[in-house]
Image 1 (cartoon, one colour):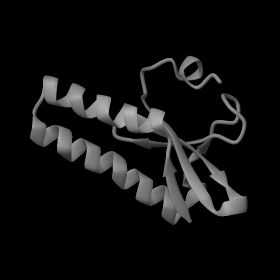
Image 2 (image 1 turned 90 degrees about the vertical axis):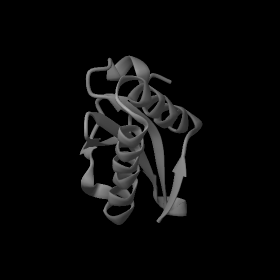
Image 3 (image 1 turned 45 degrees about the vertical axis):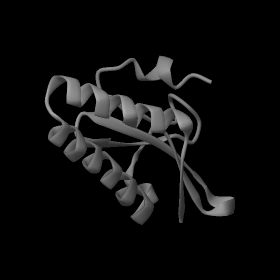
Length: 99
């Protein structure tokens, strides 16, 4: 399996890091981003590990890591996992995942 990270997910990760620095510390921000990107490894090792979020968007799966949900989908044809978004559990998920 290969990993592809959308620009939106990369932006989410950067914003999470910036928010964490602002409210806690750079050390905590680095630690939390490592935790989140560790979730990418979990998904690559077992792409079926996430919950089905097809009720929000067709073929979407989500994995809870810390206080965030990593949304992704599988592209079986080219054996790729696409990380779509990384959203805080308190966000309005449906509105942020609209096309």
